[in-house]
Amino acid sequence: MYHQGSRELQDAFGTRRLADRMEERIRRPAFTEEDAAYIASVRFFFLATADAEGRPDCSFKGGDPGFVRVVAPDLLAFPDYDGNGMFKSLGNIRANPHVGLLFIAMEGAPRRLRVNGTARVMLEDPLMAEFEGAQALVRVTPEDIFPNCPRNIPRFQMLDASPHVPRCGEPRVEPAWKTYEIFADVVPPRRA
Image (cartoon, rainbow, N blue to C red; front, side, top):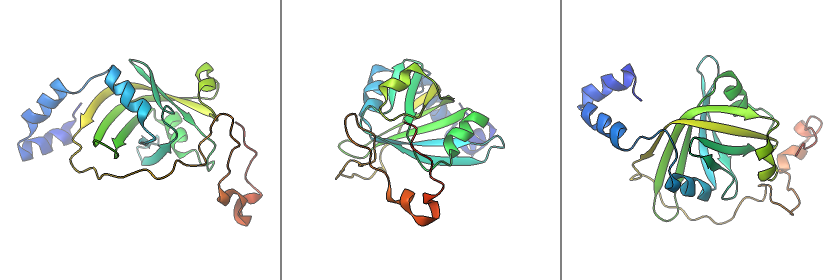
């Protein structure tokens, strides 16, 4: 779980034994039932990817509870919804499958869960039918799953769910920017 840079800093700060204990006691390679329930409850997470040269990118992924879920002890899936068309995250996954996901609960009891692993972008996948509005599906195979100390997480209260999240039986709400003159002539029709 650690590389030379991590070890050098652990040694400089005297935390190598603590880091080893954390790896031994809280790190796991498969999702627990508690992990699955927590992940299914979230409305967002952060996805870290890198291109083939290792240049990083981090994006926000959001939806209604259940939009990201554990489908097996060694598999997590989430949809890609119609967006800005840049495909930074999904393009990076195609070039470099290593990903990091950070789940943060800011309502109620603060909580963080980190998932590091490898991902695949699926344009045709039977599981896509379970995700309203999915234009692609990302499957993540975990390598390291571990909780993170929640002590600095601020507490927030959600006021409104995004009107742009695809919901079964509800008309899709397009973001205003797609009608701006500078983009309107190049926005493709929605695929899903």
